[in-house]
Image 1 (cartoon, rainbow, N blue to C red):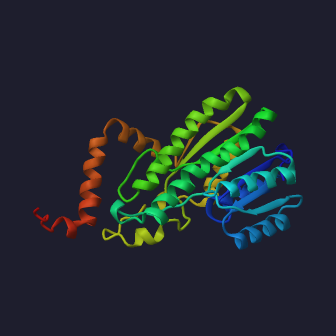
Image 2 (image 1 turned 90 degrees about the vertical axis):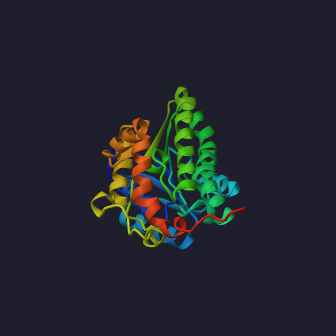
Length: 280
């Protein structure tokens, strides 16, 4: 248990599995008190017990919360402050993904849920924590985005919209709050081994998926988040070599347009494209 943590307190959303759970373990290992927020109560309670038993002195505080609901956000932050008296770090990690062609996505269950969870929930929980951090003139807000926040790809249209929004929000917020000594970091990850979108990927006719060698483990991402708390910076891209792809998309978007259209879209939708359009 590292002494430099000084029993700092971190609030993690989306904490019940994947990157959130791995990050909770990484923070607890270093002596943090951990506020766990997620929709799934049973998984949260199990994780909280694991942290308490596995890391002496760790007070894991589970709170059932859906970040798409403003009242849940307020309750999670209030409960965490009542329990520990402070929140040093907010890791806004909760996310939702529904991949598919835009015209096939359900407006409420798949489009609005992604926007509420991935963007509105991030904005609202940062807003809820901010006055406390401003009063203390310290704090660190870490926002989980995605490589999709830089490079939009087919079937990720709504997901990309939400993550582009997080990117813009994080940049603006960082400049707003810097006079209070508050750090804001945005994390952009590629594929992570979480099962987040496995079903949608399995349905692809091309069978295309991210090569296994390029898929990160949740534990790898969690350790990178820990490193970010030690040396805060505005942007963290994981894996770092994706910066090259971001750069390529910025200076030569037409090339990627052609590659993605030919290699993916036209192959995935070949049957539909072969049908003659209805004359009106």
